[in-house]
Image (tube, rainbow, N blue to C red; front, side, top):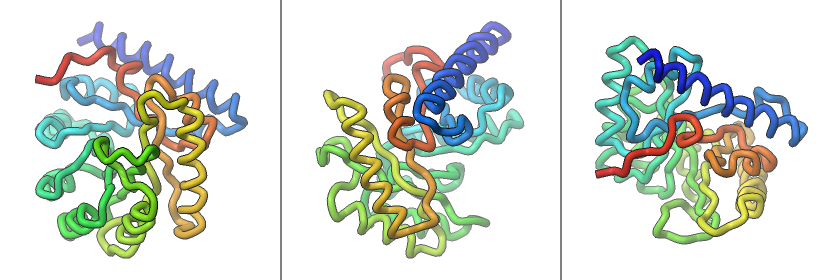
Length: 233
């Protein structure tokens, strides 16, 4: 465990350094960009270690893994903020709402309605981000075109959800700068329609610098922080 803590500490220092350098290059303050550690396929013990190193936000993309992991982490006394970042089926909404503080992958009005119903018993609204499909490919999830505004309006109209902003992944084969420049245009329009939104979740281990250049407020880092993942079974 001591060796793993040292590994994570060194990787965290490097990732934070990359974020700081990217912010400086973009003329943005370092604290303008927040780290979300993507811990999918890694054990709860890694989340506990990261929390001890000062990581406050962690991301997961499969409820069947995230729900028991969140319970184990809580039992160990750590209290990170959980971000659900994967494609979400409506029948999993109640489970996800029980541990997540943020759902980043809201891509339909029907899912927004399901989450709003599931969040009815929470002491505070659930933060929800609209997942944007930059290239419009339905196979990868995300809202495109007018659906972006329908989903965002549905979230904003709910008493049990809070519209936080947008999330996106740069499409495979795209120049990340091109992808995140398009996302920035959408984010600017969203802020005009809903002035309270503050979050643009974009950028991963391979393209965080491009995301920061184009206004990302949150970067989702897995491989650079925790190492190469074992294939999912």
